[in-house]
Length: 204
Image (tube, rainbow, N blue to C red; front, side, top):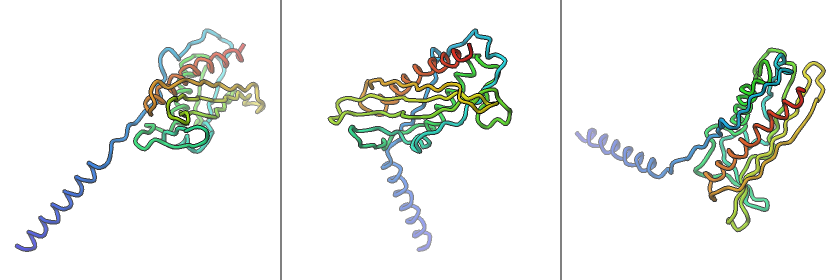
């Protein structure tokens, strides 16, 4: 009888503290990078329709390979939000959406990801220079910077054909993670059509 009472007591303690620990953990907001329909442009150019391109895995700072949502408090203090994060590492999201946009553009006959073993006519390198939110020192103003560099390479001769940096700076509507993510999405969706247009120009 004593053992049974002791067992019930222990179970009650576990349930009590378990419930407390759950309640004391604030929810984490997850944000995603969206590729909007208006950003997906299609082309009627036939010059590269018989060509193939491979988009390499993006490279950049380690912070872009995590789910952390970073921001900069100017002039040089970098932090990450405690209860807000990317649903997937931003490097992976940027890669996935860029690959999708180039594929849907119809510019090339085939678009391969970096896991492909097939040989391509072109290789496209992607570098993440900046993709963060910034706050003024007094925390009364915020903006984001989306800065990506692409390098097109002739896969046969491993020769650089062209390189271009795409950069957008956009004010955040609200001074929080949500405002930063919305602005970053806006910036990315402005950059995407420019990337496709640039690749199309190189096909002429």
